[in-house]
Amino acid sequence: MTYPVRSAQRTGARVLQLLHDTGHAMFMLLEATWFVQFAFGKRSRHETVTQLFVTGVKSLAVITVVALFTGMILALQTGLELQRWGQEEFIGSAVAVSIIREMGPFMTALIIAASVGSAIAAQLGTMTVSEEIAALEVMSINPNRFLVMPRLVALAVMMPILTVYTNILGIMGGAVVGATQLGVSFSAYMDNATQFATNKDLFVGLFKAFVFGIIITTVSCHQGFMTTEGAVGVGKATRRSVVISFLIILIVGYMITRLFYI
Amino acid sequence: MIKFDHVTKRLGRKTVLDDVNFEVGEGETFVIVGLSGAGKSVTLKHMIRLMSPDSGTITIDGEAITDLGRRDLSRVREKFGVLFQSAALLQWMNVRDNVALPLREHTKAAEEEIIERVTAKLALLGLDDAWDKFPSDISGGMRKRVGLARAVIMEPKIVLYDEPTSGLDPVTSRRIDDLIVNTREQLGITSVVVTHDLHSALAVGSRIMMLHQGRIVENAPPEDFIRSKNETVQSFLESQYITKKGKWEEFRHE
Image 1 (cartoon, rainbow over the protein chains, first blue to last red):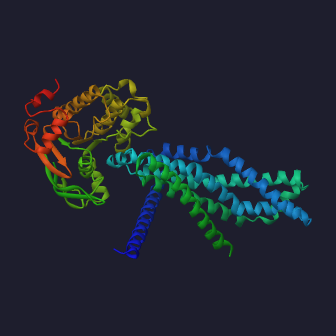
Image 2 (cartoon, each protein chain N blue to C red):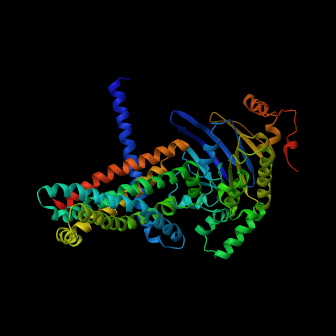
């Protein structure tokens, strides 16, 4: 067999595998979405609440630090440039609009993908290689209801809430830098911020956060379920879940921005 | 009860099951033995359709399961309890919650009744004191017993055991053998045991089938299996210091 034929065969096989994996992930998402109606039913309530707690409360510390410093860096970099032109009073709007539209949901998604998403992939991956998923199937317990749905609910609910938290802290971080480094008072900073940041910016940002939550759940759970090769495979699945989530978040983030702002 | 009819399965380029035909009758303890990679666990996974054959038919209680939809498959799987090689207990649940899981998922029983049934089952398997422990806190032998308790809690018609004695010391292995025998006698269920431990196979089996490179090389009651003229079987018996001059009854535990 000639090299071009082998190469074409390999490419074809990879494309087919990609389509198969995408189909599997979509089916898993659709089925988990159908089961959302039972999220607080007797059988799933405990797991749903646990996942809400893990996603929301346990990520707060890292989100606090990242959001605060993102706002401060943004204010300092933009403020110094604006100060050269005597326009530092616009620092409020620059920071608020950047954070609410883009940085808030984006930073939150990256943190959650790296912390919660990787943990989901590692847990489900370990369950897959240690036959726990097979055991659930044999017990006629649907893994998409038992495991995916509570995580889907948790991330879809918590991502917008955490994004609001990131937005507030980021804007406050900017205000601190404005007041201490650039001589912009808190009231002037907030006046400027509220003058330019619109409700549309907030809602588009929250919509992005919601979509990112679904992306992280789908990618992480799917990578977990596809795990093979024991402990090495779990490591690979965890890494892939973070990388793929990052890439899809970037691409989808751009598409949503384009959809609403052009 | 379980019937494999010309079942063939390939994984990649390797034929793992090659035109396999056999039948397991009601109440039997059917043991599948063979070397690693012979196709034993794959055979077991086909019975509960964790894997599907490339060709051939698998029938459970007269119903072909190869093309069943999800709901019908779920109904067929309710006939089975499975003890996995690693016990496959959910790590974040304690012993009691692991055993109670099928009851909570599939019955409308009150919590008090569930706890009562689980406690009784744990007591039967000598796990009274371990109910609040997590799988990571108990020994391999205990994990297998918890796995067995979970497998039989719904009172299935068939219990599948995947390498029940692997990774266990000889004393614990013989205790697990006794549990398999006792479970069958007390609950009157059909058992399928996959193992490479011939001592265990001879202790519990009413029939022993040996797979080699995906094909059946022997399928006989233990007294005939031990005297098989098949070279692969003889070599396998000798590798575990069992000779055809020996009496298979010696492997039965009192």
